[in-house]
Image (cartoon, rainbow, N blue to C red; front, side):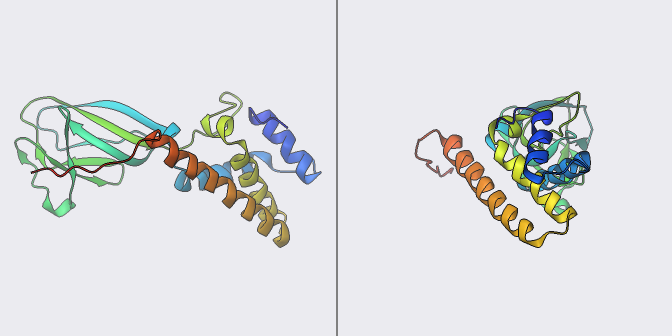
Length: 195
């Protein structure tokens, strides 16, 4: 059975559970909530350029930010630092800290700058107006078993919870393997020492 969109996901859920009284929207939303903190894949990587005005000590993260990969100013990487080490004095910045949904810079820039941010975005939620996303299109088993696990919890069926939990863990393992393999495209990762 193909699972290319939310309609097909709902149909598969009905087939697996043989029930028509399921709170589909709730089950899908609960699974997506768990995906938000557990699913990280190269297909979820995003790059944005964020303008920061002269003298600004911070800027907001994108609303779909899950985890940072790289933060650069003028193609120079910034280093993650303790919030206590940031002084917010005017000058060039080479460190930052994340506080809630905001990035705090070490120093207030003396001129307008553009920050390049590469990050993992949360899995976009499915809806009638957005019936598919990269996770459902590429790893439909993760979605199916995630929603079926939520169904088993809702139905208070411990045997199915265990079964679907095992299947979901295997599907997530395959997703993680694909991420690791695809992130380096078969090349050997090498580290460089900077003087």
